[in-house]
Image (cartoon, rainbow over all chains, first blue to last red; front, side, top):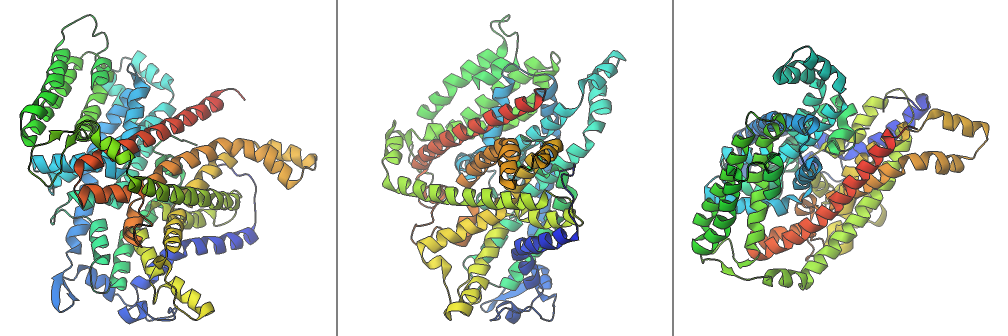
Length: 286
Length: 354
């Protein structure tokens, strides 16, 4: 993406802008809906011009909203905290363990190195529903179901294959000469790893962390089956807002979605150059 | 487990009875033994302990000897405990009569459940639905992604911002996308229904017919993942040497000829990878279906993943679902293998001097 093939002028910008905005429209419309009052959100024909209101955003966090006749806690502040906390800690653990493993796989290949890497990637490629059946049983037997510890452990395992493949692809790109030179100068293994290797993959480490955060932040099925009332994450809560209620409060849902996608949009902008590697789990670099 | 232990302790042949082998033997005896002898919960803890024992011995053995095994040990241990062990556990369960919501001890069933799953018309029906969805969504993604890539191939002012807009859907949560499209497909005030009403004068319920429901799901999924294909194709387009185009310009080659003889060979490999990767991913399709149609109307949009969810967590036919899960695992392993083969193929080509 870095090299330019052909240059085009503002005319092409105009054309692309139209296409891009059509493509982006479903997201844009949700963001607009988030700023609409309840009646505007359900208006026929759809309203393009309306008085923006923050009422939906307030009711995401306000402690009570009206469902039928009774006041019900939204609890969304808890869910947002859970999402951040669970994603943050599992990504941190996966990053530490995974970076070490990636360094090992990259620099000290084992017998059957590729077999391990293949098995690791396969665990990530399997449909989540397949993986979750036995884990669900295991968690129930061990009492981990619904606890922070259980969910964080699960997401650590969920993030590990991705972290290993990503970081390995970054380590593989470094030139080994620099490390050999450092070794000749008398640096031991630790020094080479922390002083020579790590500074070179700093950007990669950041990209891996952010990708892990987004993947965990977005994950639904594991959270649906293995989080309890206290550890519920936003996607699960969002799905529950849709299902079951007498009439979905679309404005509120749109507000939740808008809050939920802010980090995603920022990440896409910042990580554009690493995006390809990220979405293919580090298997394709360029 | 065995392969891990062997490779994690290279040179193990010199010491015939290093402790990890003993641990492995204990594990191999203890796990099936405990499943037959004890109630399920005890059996689980015995098996779990055996796995921990093997891991621990491997780690202590590698400690301070060679950095390789030691570096990868924590990661492999985590995956062993959280992924591999549960999967082996469910493989075991698929040979027993077992339902997660009953207390009765599991009885041996042999290959009963595998036979049952393979001969079950429901399974074939769901696989067919999945196949239709996968073919449609991957096909649309390849076409749309390709066109988008052609658009972004050029350098123009504001490209980065516009690229961000197009790439955003890919990074959204499935749940958010599901919720978006549920809102748009809503019969009364949904945008789609209103747009149709402008033409026909009647509200339109997309999700009422099986074809419409499948179209709705395919549209949502294709919208979400076309940017993925775009990214891959863009990477391919960038790798085309510029001088080839200049040469073609001098030869006055037509656009189509230029495309077919220069561009296509460079992106063919990446298109294949995109196809395989998206097929694996689309095969898992769960969240979007679950949120937009919940498998309905009837079971017309129930993909294999949604069906598996119902069998295991609504009907609690645990053994049957484990057997079915293993058939899916087999399919995914084949596809992943194929995918990695082509990835390596491409890396070799790139490394070869041009």
